[in-house]
Amino acid sequence: MKKLIASSLLALAMPIAAFANDMTTKYNLRVPASGMAESLYTMHTVLMIICLVIFVAVFGVMFYSIYAHRKSKGHQAVDFHESTSIEIAWTVIPFLIVVGIGIYATPTLMAQKDTTNADITIKATGHQWKWGYDYLKGEGTGIAFYSTLTTPYEQRVNQQPKTLNYLSEVDNPLVVPVGKKIRVVTTANDVIHAWMVPAFGVKQDAIPGFVRDTWFKAERVGTYNGHCAELCGKDHAFMPIVVRVVTPEEYTVWVAEQQKKAAQGQPAAVAMASGSAPARQ
Image 1 (cartoon, rainbow, N blue to C red):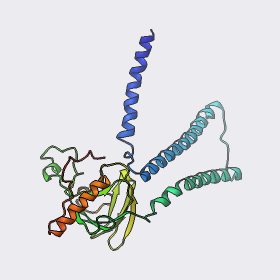
Image 2 (image 1 turned 60 degrees about the vertical axis):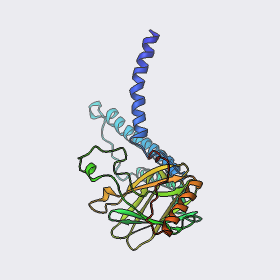
Image 3 (image 1 turned 180 degrees about the horizontal axis):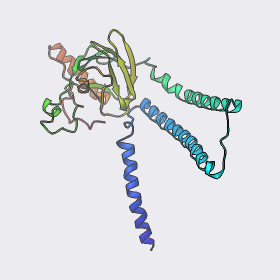
Image 4 (image 1 turned 180 degrees about the vertical axis):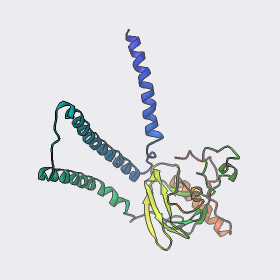
């Protein structure tokens, strides 16, 4: 009997566990790869819990009132018109909730705007439809290149099977060292674009004629994906962002290679000289 109960509970738990895994992997935010992204992930979770509590409380009271005070039981509708107490309650309580959320979220939002003391500054320029990168300050100053989608056209029109990195692969990914504060200055050459890498908690519009900035500090080596997040024309879906985070030693080697190629008049090619690309995140 105990074995039967245990088997039944296990059979019930398996689909619940599978559903929970889907909710945390397929339908949740990207796994954070920076301290800022971790803070945003936590804030998202806290605010979702607050919203859930409010939802349950409001609809719980509403459905209970509908059921327990229905007309068939002889209840009469109560008139709350011009009730000062009710007016004060439904004004003050939401106000306090919003103020509390604001106090909780402000330090993180302020930290997002603090681009001072960056180790490396990179300008990201949006073009229809690719990204241009210029290393402006720090190790690698002077390096510049375009980053363009390399997914074959045949895959886009369903003439070939789509690969694992469909629409998330480029010829020249952005390369940065792990553990360094990277300031990204954004602008655009034609229309409004947006530089967004969810794993870093970064999203900043790139506007023609304006210069805006954001920052990130990657805490793990790897390759991370993003995309333009503003509708910038017919090929909006075809200008991905790929950032390769490498060790400081690998970054120094890469910088030396790029500077050597620039001195020889060769185009920048930022693929690492050896080793396979890490899994994208």
